[in-house]
Length: 185
Length: 415
Image (cartoon, rainbow over all chains, first blue to last red; front, side, top):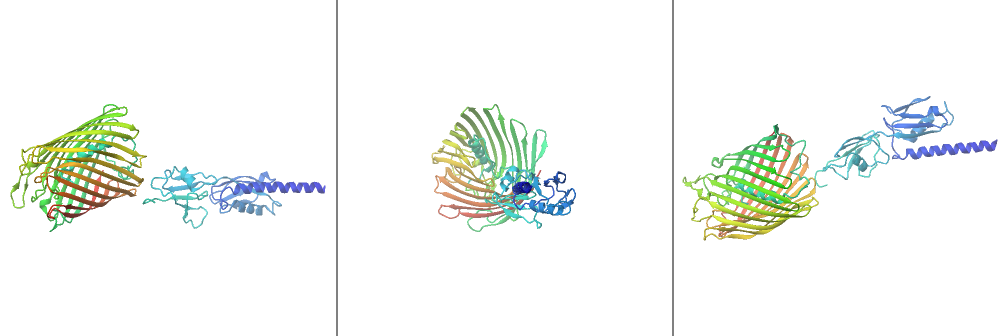
């Protein structure tokens, strides 16, 4: 009996650890500091409770509505922080030691304006850089400044423009501006 | 720097360079040729034609209006230029008509006021994919620049009427092409009153010129055409002898070889070298002959900057004393830069050497200038220019030297 319980405990630990591990790697495939925002689509899995799991989209206010715990503020949180937030809401009132894992299914689009052939909004894919974003937007115009871009990150409350290079990673919801060139450089 | 019979000669060189550069098919757009969607004039549609009317108004300041060595006189000049360009919208052939007038009014020196006007057409007929016929005609009434060596120093600038006609036929046989061209030009000078009141007869400068050219081209590589070109010309003055007793009729010919070149579109142009001669009927006038040649190159260091350079040699007419003709060598350099999509800047440089045959005189011209074109919208352009022109003549006295600065501010209203 003791052996079986120990065996089950180890199995439980291994499974939860692996599921957490999987969730962790998937959530860090975007830049580690990515913070969720309105429009992101996520999948919440509470281990062992299918009725508490599901796919959710952050509404206009950046909130998701889960069974039992209802509205929870998800925007401006990283995936790990949201997992912690949901876990703390589920325990101790509803579940004992819940195992929550979150996976981002669909990121918000990013926006690119300025000296590109087709400015507009484009779907974000993990690992995107300024250069790939420009490529999606049809490439530089003949007046574009190739070596510089200005990014307004969605999650920065101050919303000031940051200077970036072609290989700078971008995040969903970012507004990338390609400046104009006036002389030879 | 012979800008005497400007329009007529410009027409000649225009056809000459267009004939040379014709075989290059793809050219990336230069700063000046780029079509600007937001600020290009759209004109007005009239059937199968598009009309582009415009009117320009500019104010110029010239610090040496008579181009003298000393006692320079400066003045303000107001110029109004109405113009109309009409272009066909046909699929295959092409026809363009143009007419414009430039009315100049001096603030203090009324005698220098002028009214120039011109009208003409250019056309192109694609007989088949291998045969092409082009031609045109232009009439113009203009005035001679005060610094021209042929200026008679009358109390007003000399006015003249010019008629120019040209036709060109080209036939392409695979890699080989044959081109035959003809040009006719007639100049009629008006008399002018001298500063002391008597009439200066300018009819001894009236003349016509006929030229026939044949060009054989061979496309040795795609984008590279090598050619041999020969011309013969005849200049006929209306008067048997000019005011100094010389019969200025002449015959001339030239032979040159050249090639177009295109280095991946970043550097392209053409270059030729040859021999040119003009023989005068009057035994007292020396023949003018020598090496001729030219090069015209366009370099695009970036899409926003275009640099064009050219060098040409030609034999020009003159009625100055015992000079038979002028062998003129001119080099130009122009840098165009697109600072903003609607603001173009230009810097220009020009050096000319005029060698008078039969006269111990050699003139060197040097000019430099900068300009800006600001396109506020489709209908209104603002133009700013500064030009500096100077001549150094090696004649015994320095009377032929001068230095001139011209500032110009203007606007163009167009449809």
